[in-house]
Length: 432
Image (cartoon, rainbow, N blue to C red; front, side):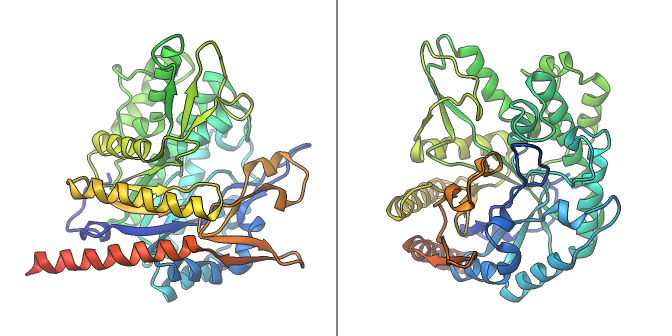
């Protein structure tokens, strides 16, 4: 299911499609020392959604990766409030901007005890996803069932950083099984409703450098395989030969569960890769042992365009479908952002020129966002600002946030417009 359609899709017209995203992390649970985080609330997107979508369209984007705040639209089991989402979807239509919907970008509703570890999580998330598709399927046909499922699994199931605060291989196995089941049920449920939906699977790039052939070899190999684990599971690739099957079995995943995933496998129509040049490559240091994660992070290496090319080609090789850069940026001054925009687009153009199916480029986000450490901090939001957007967020002195255009937006628009024109010319030549 997925990648089984008739006729060309919108991303198969020969152009390089330029998109944007709005950061949409939602972890609404709180406890002493940890406050809820909702990026839409932090960035004033709930009140300024019309302007924000207009900024994306005005910058030259043809699609926008946009997430639904599940915990808000589904405040009680079986009850939905789509009032705000109705207005947003209408705004997409007014602008002619294609929505690519993030159905799960971290976090579960407050009523779901145990969060992802709830025994019925998979059915609950699929019910919500299907309810969305039933309501908006006449206008929304592109879906990401779970954004960055392996980041979910690590933060919630290995590091104990987000609910349900699980750790180790027991936590990893619990999270991978739950996320995978919800992923499969979501995609199959939407496909049953819409038939011709497009599914864009998206996960984070996790690269490892440094001492990966010496004392850290086994750990680096394990993490390299682990980076693809949820996607391998939902696409039916976790069998007796998979490098991590023994780990999953040793920590509670039985043969019946593995057989269910194999029998119900889903496939991406597009494989999305999230790559941040300064943080996506972790370095193993000889003689130094880091646990990884927020508590004990390994140092990061700026792998630049070489890393970007590697992860895109690996995604294309593994999945055999068109690939898309679904998130990239640098958290840096404007000049550095502009430089990375030029470098990364040039790298993708080069890949396309020699026949690789890289169909889209997504700068993330449209405007700045706030660091996830806000959840564990006590300071005001401005202390956690990450300057990585086309537009800077600027406190207006009255508690609100202005969106201030930067040269990054001008550069993005110039590149997007140029590629659209080139795509139209190529299409015209083929037609002639």
